[in-house]
Image (cartoon, rainbow, N blue to C red; front, side, top):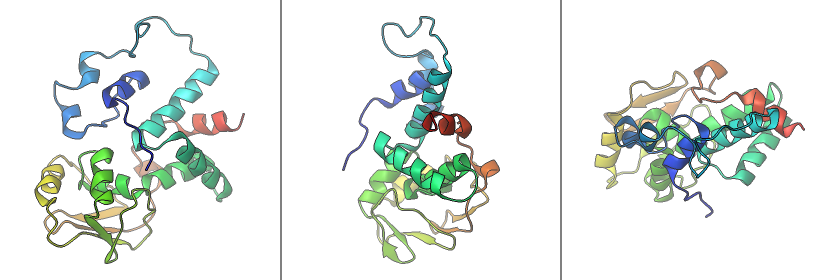
Length: 206
């Protein structure tokens, strides 16, 4: 399985803002972005020309890194979003938001998407009573998510729930029983991803 193993703090520094890729660590003074809030590399502190293409590219890279998907995966999401009725940018964010690993983070069952992917790949979660070990699985309206019986990951997951302030309105979570339900598809105003999706559409439309 292909995956991005590059340093996560450098990714936040590259994009110029916190992407909260390391969960609880991002909330402490140990956060790499807090200590060095400038791009990595020898020329990180130098002036950089902000061309139209550069702004669009950085927005695409930010979204890709935020959700933890590779370049080819992201392009396929965009192609699928462009074929759906409605606004392409909003369709793209909806597809990314409904990834199983991202849903676990939104529910508070994982501190980061990397942790969520590991929990999913190790078979700790079920959807509608069936084990799902594919992080990119698209959840649908009415899906019931539950922790597998006697999972050894319970302490880890309960620690993650303590970091969650609020669950999005399109999801319903029970942190006591570690179960959840997908109520509907997310609306754009409910997606807190720090990206301007229109810039991504403009980049791919060139």
